[in-house]
Image (cartoon, rainbow, N blue to C red):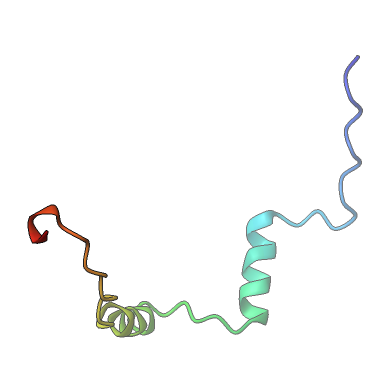
Length: 59
């Protein structure tokens, strides 16, 4: 026996419209230059130091 479908929401906005509305509400920036600038700051972060692995040759 098939399951009955849930009724459609009262506000039938597309998911993409909901996403865009939320992005505007959160004051997200869609400027590519601003994104690149922030990405460069992240990319310049030094890598985390790796702990030395115990080698059998050291023994």
